[in-house]
Picture 1: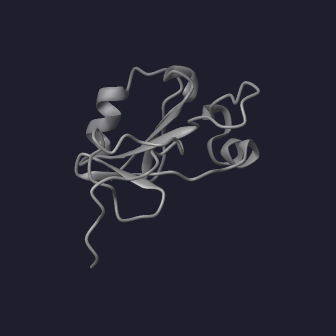
Picture 2: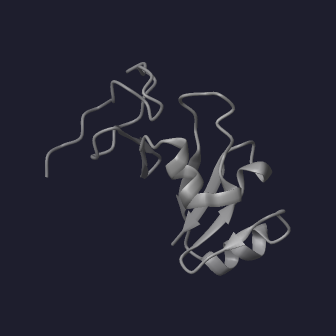
Length: 113
């Protein structure tokens, strides 16, 4: 496997990064390593976001680019559900727990194992 570059020219929002402040880049094009993980930028139209998340989707608020959702890998979905259980609109699905954007600063939070 090829060695990752020491810095990424762009962050997950597509902005230019300062190579002096950047962590190692992930191995997926368009991704940035966050700690031991990667941040993958996946541009999607608002209609696709609405289809996937329904009422839990972020409001684009007339923006053409915005953070619609962030996915986090966790070690235990039941524990995540327990900790987030009092969150208004929390959705517990087969393989993920979803915090609606209305409860998370207008960005849908998705937790998977």
